[in-house]
Image (cartoon, rainbow, N blue to C red; front, side, top):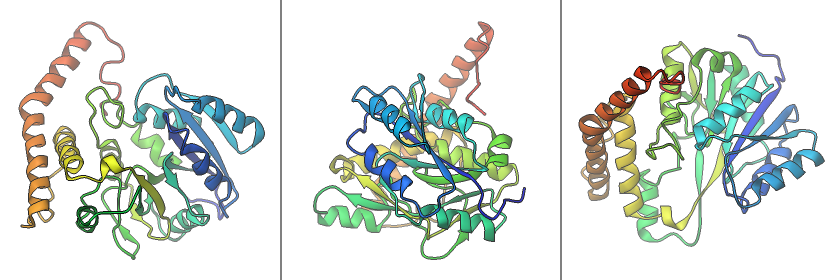
Length: 302
């Protein structure tokens, strides 16, 4: 599908209890140099005044709309935004991101200059506090979750980070929805919903392009700046990758650096647990729900 020179873009901003960060992200999106866009704020079960702020902003600013998603989880919120979007391109950013004014321009430029079905860019670390030696080392080795950088060159990739990704509408219509059993707020606290979605997009024939000019700052709070958090997250990612049957990146696990080895061991443990325990349990649950006549059984397990 060809896009017009200045396609209308929908930016979906999913949020949950981040009233301290959300207003800055909204103002950043309204300040984009690319003016042909709308901002959809999708709240999933906030209790901190987020809904009140978003509703007020939608009344004040015609480019902003508010949507409530009663189901818990980021994937459900993303799906709600997908269904309400009017743009030929649908982009996603997180509520704790700061977005430079030229972000959307860079995204659209990449679509115009390639035949990409999806485009995303770097997520640079916006650290809380002064980084310690350990934090700097974890960053150098790409071991802090929420940070993504493939370098200074535009290139084809196999996945895009969830806090900075976009797709053409026809790709979304072909691929379907984000899996509700994966992602933040999912029943088992799993990850990898964007990895799974990107894999399905690739199988459908879409090209995914990394555009270095379309970067965002991603807030990394202190609790995520620890080796313990990196190990826990790697364990969860290992479980999630096993469930979506993502191949092991052999090149990434060859490092003999002690920190990298620890993180790789945690990821391998997560994979083993998912294969031995989680996958059989989820199959039993799906079978039981289908046998009981649950019409929604498997709806999010595309």
